[in-house]
Amino acid sequence: MYSEIAAFTHQHHVTLVAVSKTQPVEAIQALYDMGQRDFGENKVQEMTEKQTQLPDDIRWHLIGHLQKNKVKYIAPFVHMIHAVESTELLTTIQQQALKHNRQIKVLLQFHIADEDTKYGMNLEEAIQLIENVRAIPFPNIILSGVMGMATFTENMEQVRKEFRHLKNIFDTIKSQFFPNDDAFCHISMGMSGDYPIAIAEGATMVRIGSAIFGARN
Image (cartoon, rainbow, N blue to C red; front, side, top):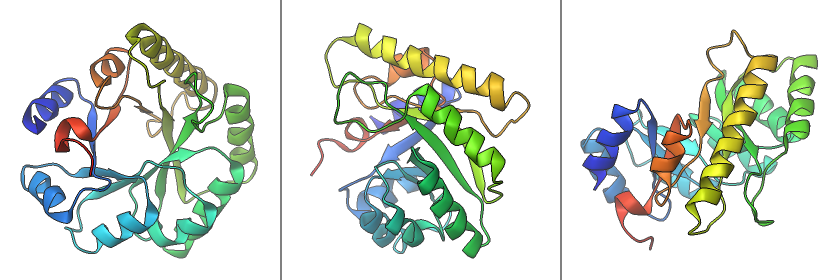
């Protein structure tokens, strides 16, 4: 299944993040040997443990909710943090990235689902956050785009509508704040059950776990 998904995403110029949470190091290494380089974890401790056992050129994506006191553990190596939703968290990432003389890519997380359990900002909150960042430069952070999770439902039209909403948010922020900034380019949306819809609606990055690895342990 991995080969088909990788070919499909490559054909559409979309980054495939293989969601490896709860998967053993051996399963990640097997995918690495097939050419996969982007892997997503949602727990800091699990990511740091795996990072020490796997090749250095893996691009690690922290896709879960991130607490400020845990940033220091992933700052030395994380490629991208997908779920940023506050100036306070951004400030901590900036401080830790500076300590390690790195630039860390981040995505702004938006609440697009019809579910209260999901995290994320609305457009007004995100604009305030971006204005805060511009007032106090954050040189070790690269704002790289937006991320969102659709409602867990079998109603694919609702899912499509939510993905379209995130694409509209991206377009608004891009035109207002980053019209000439090539780094602000990513829309991270779509998982195992809905990634073809996400790609059709403008995703540049999809996070796929069970469709690649099978049912989660």
